[in-house]
Image (cartoon, rainbow, N blue to C red; front, side, top):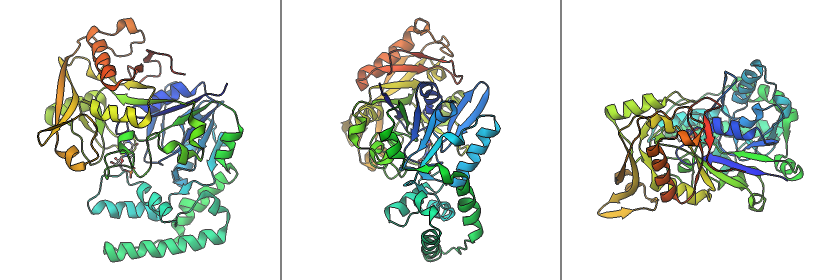
Length: 426
Ligand code: IMP
């Protein structure tokens, strides 16, 4: 029987998807990344070896697992080359079982430059990996796809045209001189492409024709989705389940029997700008950040931290039609005498329990908290449900009741074995 499993972020990214996907992908034949690019950073520790995955699906680390970079991604070829070389240097050969969609777009050096320029004027705090501009070029119909790299003439003409366009923006809008040497195009695109030439195929066809088990790995999180997130403080792709069909090139019908789980932290973090109703500050924030080790895997930036927001989490459950939640970092809350959870927002005398589209409301609302008793015992590394402290269990039950779907799995520490299932997943 073929199995389809989707694992995606239910918050603002950094929920700990790397470890979860690593564990779950072991049983799957194929793993697929379908949106975003090297803005992602999924950390996995296997037998003491640490890997940080940016572009590759995490499942590819398993010897039998075929990895796919599908058409919805924007790919920095140089970054991909370095990622593969780094993994292979650790003794894990993967290139021969990677496929890249011929329709995926290429992140060009000038996209990264534009990302920097755009950030200078009312930026949203991007990862500066060129993601937004690469998608911008895609939708302007000026992008470069993997297939174009096989045709020197098409490629060179398109790049020349793009460079003129970027020059104009840099000089006329930002007053900055912009020179791009072909040397960069050669170094960052043409040379790395040689490594991938025979790995580029129609990946949608491959998936349609291979009746195998497939795990789809979302990057970022639902609250960063270009349509369903806290726009404009979002990434430039559909990082919720909405991105599955266009990101893979497969009909929504293909996913009708898929199970979809959202990964969420037991509290909340975000990197970059944008609304965060339950954010905490000062010493309280410092303590949580240190306990949770909340520093970005891609950029090293300290993450903003706050209490679990159930209004936002319920939004994720609804948007993605989640079958359940995988809750991570519960152990970070060990020792708190009390734990707050947000159950509504108050703005202008009105109470919101549906996640608002309005940035104004999200930025200026006051969270309504329910305070639950904490637990003194350590949950770190527990793998047995009977070891879960009574108040931790109550915390989980409170979340489940509010969001209306079960918590199916708990991650109780960074190590691979530190988890427990509360329900069967697939
Ligand atoms: P971009 O994706 O680099 O354009 O950045 C847009 C927003 O998404 C910024 O707030 C980033 O911090 C955030 N973001 C992008 N990728 C990730 C991720 O993998 N984890 C968390 N936040 C991310």
